[in-house]
Length: 88
Image (cartoon, rainbow, N blue to C red):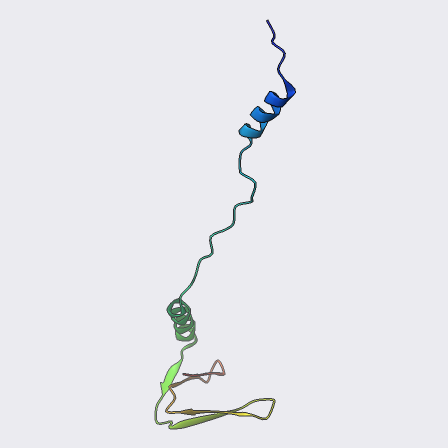
């Protein structure tokens, strides 16, 4: 025996079966700390063969806009073979 179903009841049942909700699921944002980025940078610099340069008391960096960035007692590292200098 087949029973005829009311269209309203059928629509209710279909709405309950729906999966996934009404919103798309958002990805969880992974926050990375500054120390993780610093470790990656130090590892990359180590591969380049960077050496520390001591005895520098100040560093002046000149920008394209004509301004000067001045650093007192910086930590300077250099790799002359890779033409790379870092200033902390």
